[in-house]
Structure formats: structure tokens, C-alpha cells
Image (cartoon, rainbow, N blue to C red):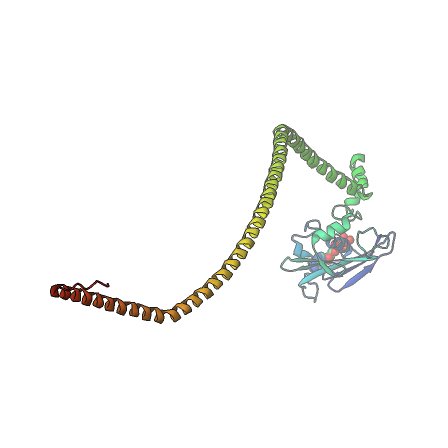
Length: 322
Ligand code: ATP
């Protein structure tokens, strides 16, 4: 992995778009004092997410925007794009070339892009941290710093060398892992407390579980017994139903028989009534005849009595024929 190119537009002294191409190995930028060599280094730090204006040798972050020089007017924004060769896949992204862009406007708003797609500063830091060139992981040795390094004590020099060798990345990972371990230990302690607490609750819970098991068995027995009773009831009701059905059939047969008898009797009654209707005038006539004859008999008896009386009165005995 190496830096392929750096494009500056409106960044510090680079008013016009300027692209620097780098090859693997050492690259040198040569120029007179004040020509903007350090601005190139600042652009590198800035595009990788540098957040300190002081580190970029300014009072505030907007100072990186071209402020005008000679007859060229100040610009409204600064933009730097860094292209990194990723053919060895050092950056965890599926591109052989990765381009990171940072843009800043006069109102202080910053924009980031990864391969032309909008991104957050966090995304850029995450992308670069794996390769060891992220924030605080690359080493920029500015003017004057070299002397400081050369004159430093061996222990201080060791830290510079460690950082330059990329050990910082691993140290950060170690710190992160240690923080995680501390967190995990806390979780472990909590877990132990919980285990202890749960252990205390386990006995009553076991008793409850046993009771629940027994209750389940009793409930199953109860259900079974209820089913048996219901089954027996069904059998009984079915027998009763069959019995009732038989009785109903018998009654229906009786009703049918009685109906036939009733019909026969009705017919007989009608016949008798018809006979009666036929006999009634004769009965009436017989009654009338009997009445007439009775009246006549009474009259004859009366006449005989009168005759007998008269005969008696006349002295002659007339035998009674009544
Ligand atoms: P030296 O070798 O003396 O350190 P250098 O080549 O590193 O110089 P730089 O310090 O990178 O030069 O550049 C300084 C130049 O950049 C100055 O001329 C300064 O005016 C110009 N400069 C810095 N910031 C801006 C800006 N925002 N707008 C315009 N020009 C700027």
C-alpha cells in the first residue's frame, strides 16, 4: 500500500487544482522557502481527518481555505483528495484504489467522501485505522521536529520509533482489548452475583416445579376421569334414546291402530246414525200409534165403566171386559 496522488483545490496556497503523483518508496518535494511544501504535508494530515487548526499551523480551521494572494481573490472552499493504492487490500474495502476527499466551506462545514460517495469522518478514520495510517497512527515529522528527535533522550526516541513502526496501532488495539476485558470482568462479576442469587432461589423453585408437576398429573387424571364419566353418560343416554325410540315406535303403532279403530267406530257410528235416522220416523209413528191406542183403550175402559155403571143402575149385570 502506498499513496498514489494528492489533489489540492483551494487549499492554503494552492488556489488552482494541483495534483501531486507519488511512487512507492521515498518522494521528495523540492522548492524555495515559502513555496508551499509544508502545505502539502498539511493537506495530507487534513484529508485524513486532522481536527486541530493549530497542528495545521492556523488559528481556526477555515484558515486552510485559500485566502487570496496577489491578484487572485479568496475562495469559498478548500478541497483535498488523497488516492491510496489498495491493490494489496490493506484497507478493508473492496477497491484496488481508494480515494478519500475532504471539503470545507467558509461556514466551517466539512464534507467527506470515500470513492465519491458521501461519508462521515468516522468512516474515514475507521477505513484508515486498519492500515495504520489513521488519525494519530501516521507520523508527520515537521520542520524543526527532526532536530528534536535527533537530540531527544533514547526513551523518547524509542516512542517516536515505535509510532513510526506502526506499533501504536497495536497498542491502541491492546488498550481497546484491555478495556473490553475490564468490561467483561464486570459482566462476569455481575454474572457470579446473579448465579449466587439464582442458586438461592433454586430450592423454592424446585419445590414449586415439583408441585406444578404433581398438579399437572392430578389435572391429567381429572381430565381422564371426566372423559370416562362423559363417555359413560353418552353410552347411557344412547341406550335411553334407543329405548325411547322403541317406545315411540310402539306408541306410533298403537296410535295407528287406535286411529284405524276410531275410523272404524266413526264409520259404524255414521251407519248407526243413518239407521237411527231411518228408524226415527217409524218409532215416532209407533209411539203415536201406541199413544192413540192408549187413548182409545182409556176411552173404551171409561165407556165400559160408564156402561157398567148404567147397567148397574138399571139392574142388569154386564161383565167387565177391560
Ligand atoms: P518553508 O520552507 O519556509 O517552511 P514552505 O515551502 O514549507 O516554506 P509553506 O509554509 O508550506 O511553505 O507555505 C507558506 C505559504 O503558504 C505562505 O506564502 C503563505 O502565505 C501561504 N499560505 C498559507 N495559508 C494560506 C492561505 N489560506 N491562503 C493563501 N496562502 C496561504
